[in-house]
Structure formats: C-alpha cells, structure tokens
Image (cartoon, rainbow, N blue to C red):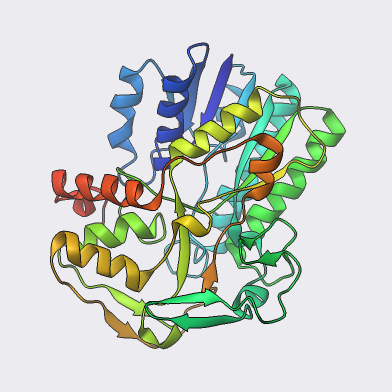
Length: 355
C-alpha cells in the first residue's frame, strides 16, 4: 500500500510516518514538505534513512502537487498549527488561508484525480470559542475541573468534549480554515467517491516536537522550564489552571492504520486525543517539571489572550467504540519521553529557531 504524507518533516508527519513503518511491513511511504518551519530539516535525514521518499515542495503550488507520485492514501499533516495564526504578527490571514485551506483544495484535487483516500488531520479548535469559554468549571487545587453538577451544553460530559459540540463562529481564523477544509473534504469525498476520515486532534506531544508553544505546549513548557527561560501563566487569574489533554503521535498512527484498513463510512469525523486520563493544567505541568528539573516558577500575566479557553479535554469514546482504538501511552509516558529528550538536547529550542 502506498501512503503519501503531507508535512512529513514536521513533528506529527515524521512521527506518524515512523510509527506506521514500525507497525506495518506492507507500506511504502513518500511525503512532501516545504521545510519552512525551523527544525523540519532535522527530520529529513532520518526519514530518508528509513526508506521514505521526501519531496521538497509546497501544497500551495498546484504544479508541486501534480508532480507527486500516485498513492492509495494521503495523510494530511501539513498546516500552520497555531490558533493565533493570522493575528499574531507572524503570518497574515491570507497566508494562513493559503496554507491551511488552499493547500487542502489542491490536495483534494489530487485525491479526486488519483482516486486516493484521505486522512485529514483536523483540530479541536474548530469548536466555538464562545461555547468553550462558557463551559462551567470549578477550581480544584492546581487545576480547573468541569462542573458536572451544572447544566452542560450538547456534546459535553465529564468525559470531555464530543464531536457534537458547537462549531458556531467565532472559532478563530485558524479554526475557520480547518473547519472549511473539513467541509470541502466531505463534499469532495461524497461527490467524487473517494474514502475519507477526519480526525479532530487534541494536543499531540512527544520527544522531538518543535520548540514553540503553538506547536506543542507540553514539549515547549518542559524545554523552556529546564532551560530556565521565562514562562507565563496567561489569563484566567494568572494561576495556570487551564487544562489540555495530551496524546502521543504513535497512538494517532495506530488509529490511522485502523482507518485505512477498514471500509469507509459516511459519518467520518472522529476525535483523537488524550482524554481525561491524559489531562493536565499548566500549574500541574510546572509542578511535574519542578520535580524533574528543579524549581522554576512562571510569571502571572493577567491579560486575556484571544481564543484561550479554560478547559479543553477530548472525549474519544466514539473512536474507541466504533473503531476499537486504544490509547496505550499515558501522560507519564509522554512527559518522561519529552524530559529525556530535554536532557539529551539542552539546545533544542535554539535549534528550532526559538530565540
């Protein structure tokens, strides 16, 4: 089976490619990457060594996409991954749209012409900013917890946010490009009859993740903590109580492998995340890092930041129930893997362009 991975030199693309090769012997993997992101070149040699064909190209260029080899399945891991993209001064709204939506359109044309199936990696930031901000939470020690005694909106339970949660705007420019990509993928799949799976991902985390908060808060936080770089608890009283759930790219690869080996289904949107078991606040993450690397306390920053939410935990029960997906890498495994990488690569943030 031939697999094409976009953004293959990024953290998610490279780790998924490696995990798929380790889990299945019948796969032939190629990938495309524009090598724009600092750190992406670091993964190119290792992928080539493993027999992956890495193509330097840009999904925004139709001619680059037309030149790609045929494949049975495409895994789309290429995107500007920051919820602040388009408003943070690092990229413009047009650049964001060209990367995240324009690139997807070119890829959908590829799938239409080659009759290739598509695994679209989307995000939990397609959900309503207002609805996320209004989730009832209570403070419990060093963390926010969902107040299960309060009235909960559709798609929310003690197990987290499910696929039925509101996508009512505003959802951020980034979220809008990803939601629009989902809609276009569903329409292309239905119209041109190629298989499609959409995985709305939580916070992927593990060793080797590029060192910015937007590209992976768990990895960035541990690297910055160990290097005694300034850290901030932004908003929510400046206490670091906001919660996210982490999951490992190897677990994502196992979900993808299950999807490409079974018949497609009409309702193709699934959650992929760490769930309650892998949920942690920034304050709890700091306490973990203090035990591992020595004390280093963040500075409170009371200013609110656009699109922040107090509690985002992915309910992945549908993928577990319908696809038999089992996450096997818990939060301790993930944090210890990152910490070992921190110790082995104390200059990692500089290598990834973080000054």
